[in-house]
Image (cartoon, rainbow, N blue to C red; front, side, top):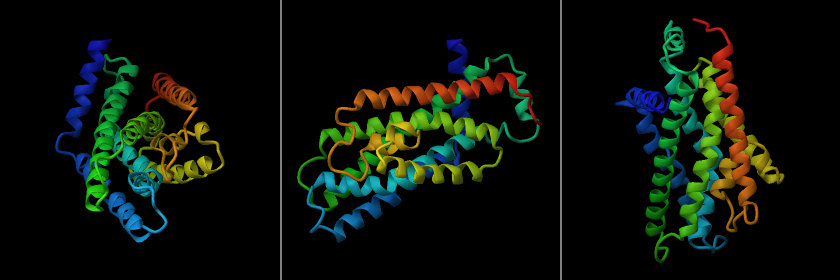
Length: 246
């Protein structure tokens, strides 16, 4: 089964070869970086926290409006080929466990999320240097980036399920943007650990100086694990039990 999973992962990577997904994941994060830096530059009298203040502005835009839609672009693209013609029928009749199919797509998505998060951190460091901030970004900000990766993977399980059921490419992207906004509202209410799209905001420690998960790190990891298992299990069960619609 492990060998089959790695085969599925290689196949999913082949789908992304020369695709626009890489370009989107590298270019679009530049937009919130510019927006956040511009907002920081215009409010230097209020934003006095140095690197942390700049991070609060970057993540305000990135976590709230860009992160989840970018994940959705990747997930929808990975299901795009199967959603045309009779390709889903061919996939489901192949001698491959459906769990390997799903986790193959999820593993590739997780890899892209990690690359994207590291790129976001590089952009943040470049913007901070441009603004004349001293030294290097604090190490805990890199930790927040990696923590946001876990939240992103939990969301990816949900979005892969959504993209599997909705054969439109644009509709899941729009829904993920809406869910991101709802996630921000959950965070503002103190319910950030109870909605998968809020985990991105919490993990990235968006729009705040102090760590919003201080003392709640374990609860965050448990919440990520629960949503990951819930949506992965639901997707695999649907693939096993629901008839394919050509």
